[in-house]
Amino acid sequence: MKDTCPSAALPAPRNRCREPIPAAGAGPAWPRPNAGCTDELANARAEGVGLPRRGWAEERGLPEEWFGEPPPAATHDHGQPSRGRGHRMTTKAMDALGRLESEAVHIFREVAGEFDRPVILFSGGKDSTVLLHLAAKAFWPAPVPFPLLHVDTGHNFDEVIDFRDRTVERYGLRLIVAKVQDWIDDGRLTERPDGTRNPLQTVPLLDTINEHRFDAVFGGGRRDEERARAKERIFSLRNAFGQWEPRRQRPELWNLYNGRHRPGEHVRVFPLSNWTELEVWRYIAREKVELPSIYFAHRRAVFPRDGMLLTSGPWGGPRPGEPVRELTVRYRTVGDGSCTGAVESDAAGIDDVIAEVAASRLTERGATRADDRLSEAAMEDRKREGYF
Image (cartoon, rainbow, N blue to C red; front, side, top):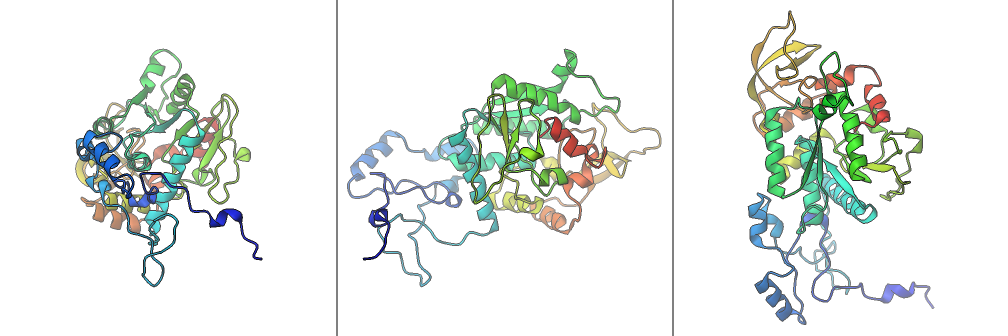
């Protein structure tokens, strides 16, 4: 007698009126009725009960193709449909972007199942925009079940803030804005002599997390950006003071994530950890993700400082000996205007940007962020204090 698991002979459980949920990369599909529930589904569609409306995506400017037909039946290597009694699914091999997307969607759903009060950090930059796009896919056709949080230094680029507000309105989400200026006005923070406010974001971030009792905070950090971020796990435990302790990082084997934490602690979650800047841009091209215009070539008055091209704004302007010139530039990353530099570029479209990034030998933070140049361990020191 063969040794077999008793459950192996049992058919996979199925919803009475729907096929199993398709793979994350395939996007949502309309329910496929079986013979026993055609009338029930027809009535539900007619009444609009429990089913997505075709106009839902159009109203929010989201890809209408997400309402595509259900994926084909699984096929074997010889190309014939599977005749098994189990789930109908696609076995088409995913490419690298598909695998990264699937991993990120899995992480979003894992957090939704493990935590009570997650929040997504959203600044309007390319990484947080891709993060929000992935969250929308993870929970489609339902809305994203988390609010958004932006720590606003008051020194952001106008194009980015306008894009942030439009995107929040398009998705119909709640945005919490923690303004650094409010902490300065009431004395909880003091302006730095150099005028940059990027390091001042930590206190407003931790105060807002504590005020709203968020227990999971999504961020768009990637391991290829900087050495300190390369050491961080996807689920990064922070203590009751919001500090990162490298020795308390937990192993993450076989995509198993440990979200356990004590009262007062929280977990930072980085679904894009395994992505590179080039993969982010290729995904943006594939998914047609909208970005602020600042990421593409445009004319701007800039001045050189410490090997970077900075621009004038509320944070200040050029010092003596720093000539102002109008150049064609773009931004690889966006943040506090006082410490975020532009790069000379003619990349006016996504394909041009992808070619430019592929040829670059410097990460975007290494090339254009002055706050990471304060010391060899500038980022790690800030993370230990509670920074992103």
